[in-house]
Length: 200
Image (cartoon, rainbow, N blue to C red; front, side, top):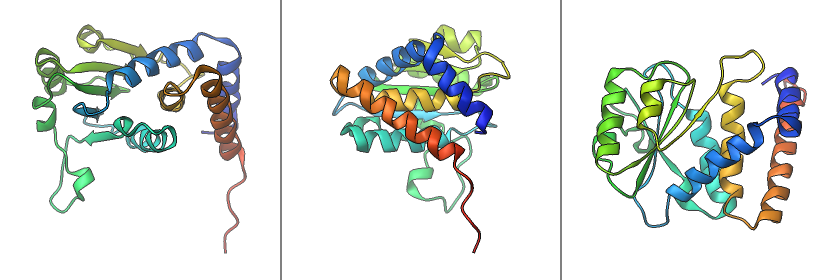
């Protein structure tokens, strides 16, 4: 994220519907992944794997004391020799059941194969959430969806930062959560605008 996008992040926090929209989506995410439930499955499209969001959710799970936020990254292609945490293929979505949450992150069309598996997971009782560019078919299956417009001013990466930060804060008392969210986003902006480390 460059300085222009960081400025946008500050503007988003100060003024549009995005703070409340991302908090609402994060609240649904947080409430759908219950302790001792089946867990959170995170999947992207064939062309896009949501590594960044997975890493942020792992951090939020640790910082907020809510291990159920730790996602299982579901991948379209699993290679022999991949480590265990990167070896979950699309078949895992077929096995999703009630008590599990499937979060689909799709900056582009999700594709027929993924949509079919999402449909089956929902039919089996899993909660389906979508963070995407507004695919109608995916939204028709999702219990909650947040569409990021195709705009030079806002992108899916920025919204993923807001959603992941708010997901952890929703487990805290309101005042403390707002304070920690502000602190986290302030640190994020500082990190993004800091000069690159000097080379040795």
